[in-house]
Length: 328
Ligand SMILES: NC(=O)c1ccc[n+]([C@@H]2O[C@H](COP(=O)([O-])OP(=O)(O)OC[C@H]3O[C@@H](n4cnc5c(N)ncnc54)[C@H](OP(=O)(O)O)[C@@H]3O)[C@@H](O)[C@H]2O)c1
Image 1 (cartoon, helix red, strand yellow):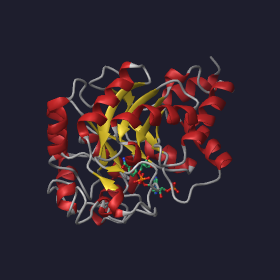
Image 2 (tube, protein in one colour):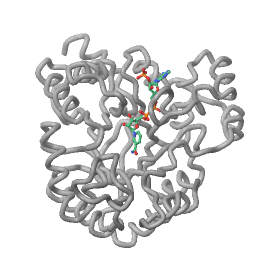
Image 3 (cartoon, protein in one colour):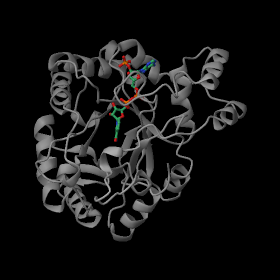
């Protein structure tokens, strides 16, 4: 094995075993951004990430990055950066316009086509929301939001695993109540629930609930999407996190990410900058003390993305409280 390859392998971050029996690296690279860089730039960013040690990539049908990620995987195989596709953990997500029993399989096939892959490692129901098929991705009309058929959608997700098109299936943005309903009918339990989670929205009710049921929580916007379209400064400019970071000679981002890891959760963090990508992996050889964890517990809590776009007085969710079952 060439020396460079050895170095890369040593840097591959920690792995957890999901309830499906499959392994998932704790840290994933977030592949959502707005505005998106041009395709070729995205491909080289994803290759950079693999060189740095990322093996878990988080994309979605609605991000517009599946094709670039697929090209990066093909290139990484071609140049020998990875020996086989199995070395990667690729997540994608079912968008709301396909959240219907008969649309799940075609949507997954389309995702696989864009990625140029034969299977995903993890396929998530992106939101507990169904929008009329064919409606605009984000700019749908409020009357195009339809009742969400959790039963039919999940049955089709299970079918996708049975067909070998995805190793694991899971959820995103599901509350405890919605997970309970799902567990009543599921024959394959969700392996993961990917949710907004960071020091400013700690998911204090959902994390212990998911742990008890063997569902892995994966945090999205672990840095509150600092500087991004849907972001805020609740993490990166938080005085408590800044003080802890200064006292430990770590970056604010590292303290925020380490906190998630110490909650027993995974995270997908987006950076398209090589130095910050490296920094975000360097959280495993030090820890936050009990005192520091207690200080972080005092941070005021607020959900960053309330999901108003999915709420309408005549729709299935009439308020954000209904969407989140009161957990806001
Ligand atoms: N399931 C869902 O509904 C859902 C929703 C939103 C996001 N996600 C997933 O979660 C991923 C991550 O969330 P996110 O993209 O919203 O935000 P995030 O990872 O919390 O933050 C990303 C922002 O932080 C900056 N950043 C990254 N590392 C940094 C560091 N070490 N120091 C300073 N700034 C840093 C990035 O800029 P640079 O790129 O310039 O470093 C970017 O502007 C997404 O990419 C997507 O894959 C899922």
